[in-house]
Structure formats: structure tokens, C-alpha cells
Length: 532
Image (cartoon, rainbow, N blue to C red; front, top):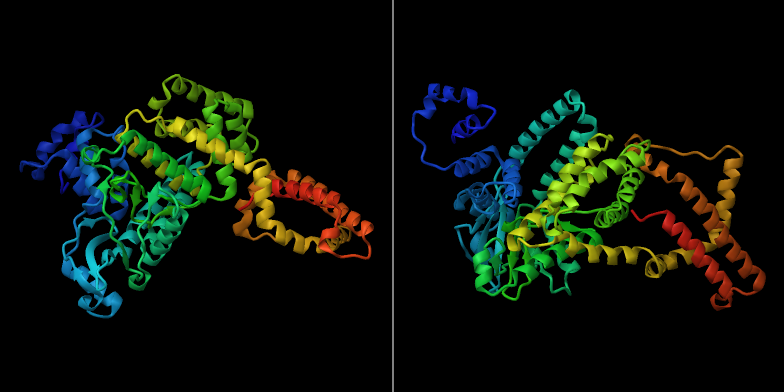
């Protein structure tokens, strides 16, 4: 009520029949002069960091919001009301246990950016280097814990009273969100994230990551190199510096897919307040508090799903959802395929540039609910980031064909996961270990078979492992066969080598046929056990 949101609520279609009651509310007798967009933005600021982040996500989706609200919510990216400079100075001095003047040659009291978790000040080190100093908001942890507690209450109600609750897994989603937010409060972790991302793109012209000054970094204070560039949301300034916006939008898509599939480590807070563009068109990223990772299995299933969608292979999409455990094992693949086709065909009849990943994900989720599809908490950050990337890319270039840009990258990635290059990579990475363990394999196989025959083979399962085992069981038959075949080949190679040169143990005396058998056996085992 403080910011007049009651007027906006009563103006909706649902409450129009009773909107006359606002004349009975004393606080409506005073004329408000602020716009609806500003009232929404201020209300989100007052509600706290979680709601500010929600507003940041919405601000990137100009296709879903009226222009006035989207523009106002964009201020939540780096223009949240700052806390007093004197308080920031005190927090920094407490972190360093010395005067600010002893640490910095110059420190600008007025922050040039302020967000929901922290604010940023410009400074100069005594050696003349220009830096930015990020300091956490005071007493931010209790505020976040309060909001998270509220989310858990809502999640429990959803799980208890809504029939779709078990599939949505609301408590797991909130737990994943809580972990992400708590991690964001540790600036040492953010510094490590920035350093890793900088290393990943060290030789790339696509993305620049500022250097971290570790000697000046603490749990609540982060000091990094100061960068200079145009905020990516400032389209007019980008045009004035002759930046090719179409190429820029495509490079943004390439950066995202490179992080997700090549590095398995991606910036998961890519709203316009965190992205800048250098004069030569190179992206510059800041704020690495929220990063996402995927294991190899999720990477593989996502890449294959994307490619199957691109090729309208709905049967493959349905089968992948079953194989990955995202829908129930007893789901009829043909029925799921038909449901997906019903959703996708009307969308794919449009030009690809008019297709929204966001709308497609929403429609697919609505369809999958009928087949008891469970929400995958580990993919929430990826979906959020993908929506951000799409919204940002289409601000730069309304003609952006996100799918056409992504498809060649995914095809290259899949080619690297299957075939000779994949085999060579696995041999290079794991070859020394395999060679070291090879002499022990016959004895190990004998011990396992002996224990199985005598009924002494035991397996211990911890309660927290049951969820992971659920998916592993689906692959048990394939892996068992692969183990038997691959192990037999390895043992055969060892026997051939021994029979050929019984009195020699030189590495070069092993017959070439043994090496071929080792390679085939190893490949069978590797392909059956994806990297985690």
C-alpha cells in the first residue's frame, strides 16, 4: 500500500468489479504523482534482495512487459538505493583492519553502481592502478534468510496442497536458490569464480574478465581491475561507436554456449547491468557471484535435446526425457512424442527469428506436467540465464535467430563427444591411469566374481544417494554388458601380450593387436560410464 500497488491490483480484470472500494481507503485520498512503473520498482526494492533479482530478470524480457515497466525495472540492475558512504568506508576498514588511506591512494565515496547485495566504489591503488571496490551491504544475511524462510513456507504449501507439487519439487528449487544466494555473499568465492572464468577465456577475443587483486580481497570486500566500456543496454551509445549490433548479439549467444558446453562453467547473472562492450566490440563481464555448472550427463542430454528440437525429431526429444529420468520411466514414448509435436509444430511454422525459447520452454513445461515431469533444480540457473540471453540478444538485434546461431555450435560439440576425437581425448586424459591399473584388472575381476559366487558381494546405499541411484538403475543393464565386454577385451589383451613375450616386460614389445584390443575395450567402458 505504501507505494500504491493497491491501485494497480484493483485495476486488473479480476478486481475491476470491486475497484470502487478504493475510495474507502484513506491512503488513496492523497494524489500520487509517481508512475505505475516507479511504484512497482520501489516496492520490489523495499521487499528485499530476492524480489530485486526477480525484477532484474523481468527487466530483460521486453517481449513480456510494457516498455515503461521494463525500462523502470532496468534500474534494479545497478541503481538500487545505496547505503551511506560512511558505512561502506567503515566496513572496508574493518575488513582490512587499517585506515582506508593506508590501503588506497584514492577512494570515491559516492558509489557508481549499487545492487541488491552490494555496491561498488571506484578507487586507486598506491601503485596507480585503477580498481573497483565491491562491498557487501551491511546485515544482508538476516534479510536474505528471512526471505528464504518465506519461500520455504510457500514451497511447503505448494507441495502439500497442489496436486502438481511433487513434480515441481518446490523445496528442492528453493534450496538450490538459497545455496546460490548464500554463495553470492562470499566475495572470496566470487573472486575465485572470476579468476576461473578469466582463465577459460584467456586467449579469446569474445569475452574479457577483469583481473582480481587477491591481496585486497576479503570475504565482504572484492577489489578488481576497473574496466571501461559501454553498458550493453545503452543501444544508442553502441550505435554511436559503430558497434555491429547483429554480430554482437550472435557473439553473445556463442559466449553462452561456449561456457555451458565447452567449459561447463557459466555466468548465471547476465543481466545488462553486468555486461559491457569495449570499443572493439569485445564483451566485458562483471559480477561473478552467481555461476552455474553442469555435469557431463546433463550437458549431453541438453545438447541432444536442442539438436532434436532443431531437427523436429520429437521422438528423440521424448526418448531423451525418459532416458535422463526427467519424466517417469513408464511414460509411453509415443504419447509423449505426440504431445510435444502438438506444442512445437504451430511454433515452428513461424520464422525461426520469431520463436522465443522462453515461450517454448513454458509450453513444453505445461505439456510435460501431464506426464509427471519433475523440475530439475540443477537446470534452473541455466533456464534463467538462457531467458536473459535471449532477451538481451533481441534488444541488440530484433532479427536475432537464436536457434540458427546456436545449432552449428551444438553440432560441433556433439561431434567432439562422439567419434575419433572423443576417443583420443579420453586416451590422452586417462591413458596413464589405465596403463597403471591394467596389471591389476584380472585380479580385481577375479575377486569380484569370487565374492559374487560366495554371496559376499555387498553394496551400501546411503539415504541421500537414493535420488542419484534412481537414474543409474536405468543404465545398469547397458553398463553391465559394457563392463563384461570391455573387461574381457582388456584381459584378452593382457593374455596375448603375456603369451607373445612371456619373459619380457618392455613397453615396446607389446603386440599392436593388444593395443587395438585395449583401445576398443577402453572405449566401450568409457562410453558406458559418462563423466560426472
